[in-house]
Length: 496
Image 1 (cartoon, rainbow, N blue to C red):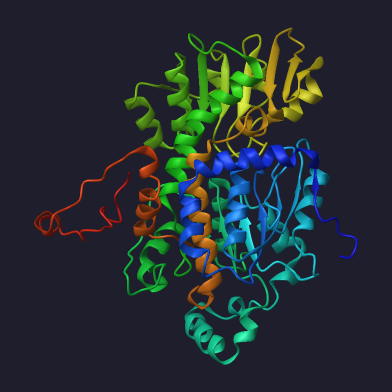
Image 2: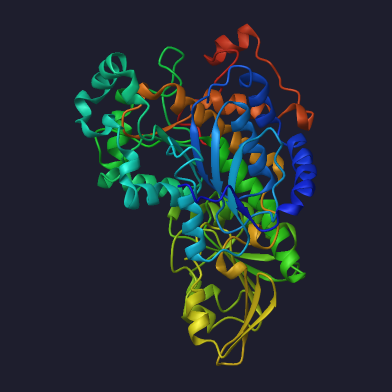
């Protein structure tokens, strides 16, 4: 590890510019600044060596500096897109490996740089966005999981064994990776699969999903005791243990409201196309898809939705959107947006039936939703119009415009989500890292969530910035509703 580069970015001379931009972003991220105010003096993350795999944006820089302010060390890479320069405070010690336009090989190299710190010590926490770092450690570097003795016992004895061993042998709790916090829908699906197949070896907190599903109490610790959730686990995963749970704020604010603004930003910067009057096809009507269709309709497009889930399809239809298959929609659309997180959404047969100069982009997660490889292999000509914008001429004479090589259009062609919306998501990331680091013995192998009460507190931390004034329940009203005056205000099954 002696030859390890201290950092690698596109242009470090841009750091001064980056510092100014970060300062502006901080003013739009009240949740993270509140974390510094409340937890900075106590340094709850002291000793944590956090490896992060996420998009290197201005907002990510504010997250990193917040984790540092709370005592953590950090090694970070980005996923495909980043600012060209990062301008951290001089007092912040952080290694960043990120530049725009990385190849697949360079991307893996960047991930591997985060596994060991400058003193040669390995990571002991993971902050992930999509599961790439989690997968790499489990598949290629399982030795870094060593010392996590909690994972090798049967579930029935695991919790009691954790408590006994942590009391008798506190040093052994330090070895290995203590926990994972995951940011995205794609990454959470990956955790589901790993947990069900037995591949997951580290407890994780899901800070993504759309609805909080749990029972929580002030006497049960921050996260819900696992035995209270057995039935839900059996329903969701076919398991009798280790259920997966979620956070409301990440999905609704990041996925819906973030995409509602950043999708149009990416398309407009890349193409300057007039959206009004066009036909836009959105694949998927989850939270990301909902944000996208709202944005496109708001700009005057006629929107068609494709969906696999009958509930989501019915929602889209009830909102006035046409719902059909991609095989049908590909003949009508002028603009195509994939939001599913699944592979093979737009394929060769769809390209061949599209209108001339149809614009195709992705705002899901990975680049597998659009079959760009088919275009590269079968198009008669490919012309790079400008960075992140390619125009293919098909053999039938029509043209297809692909944005960001099929990767995230809002990051490849624009600046990603606004700072304010990312403050919600990243505040939950910080809370998850603190919980896994400071209360390790509470969490046998599984994937957990942050409770509704904390979702409400994170939301409340952002209200002053918007000039919001909350109505307060009277004692009489609280008694009538059967709620605590200070919340949580919704039952566990409530869907926002």
